[in-house]
Image (cartoon, rainbow, N blue to C red; front, side, top):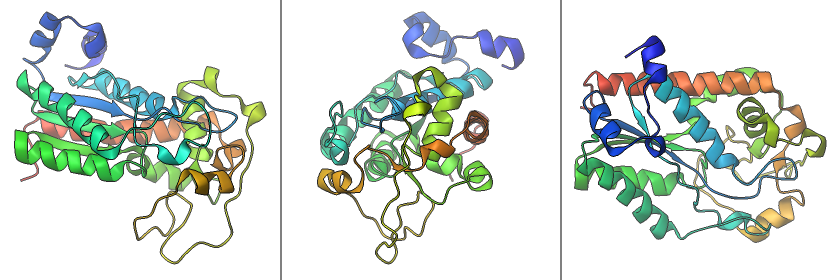
Length: 266
């Protein structure tokens, strides 16, 4: 379905009846699941950033394709952000089992392809990689982990103006200015520079020299930033956010269309 028909067709599961879903499954076998977290994002942005971003991207992909969009997962693995109030976190095993069960239940009513569109990228990438493997081996679901930091990388590297974008800084703030400007308080945005030196094979920038896996604790984050963000959100613009958004939507749409055309990983 293309054009006006695709835009008018219901694609958000939370707004559909079961008969709507039954009819939609005659056209699609693909489900997008926005996965995020509820955690602090500095003085200038709300706790729901990591959900608003993937949800907004999934909605736009849903408008362009015949895929379904599930209600988002609001709680993730965020122990490193518990030094500020409002952050929720769940155990890694709890998170993996919960996301797996959501997708497994969808497979029971005809979904064969699942994209876990992850707004809490880097921090819970390992968990979602495990979920993808489990869905493929135990449920024969063609599953994919889609971290936003990967699908908007081309636009990010082309249009970035800062050297460090780590948490609540240029990229996330720009995306939120494009998606939900009503929730961004740019007058309260604060630049927070990380340490000048990092360990070999590690970097605070999302696209830095991170060649080994590493993590921060809540104590580490509290030492790094009083505001909560790391990097410079004052450099963010709606224009940059629109480019990141289109880059991500375009790439995810390409994957969905290939899956709907019957392509597989083998």
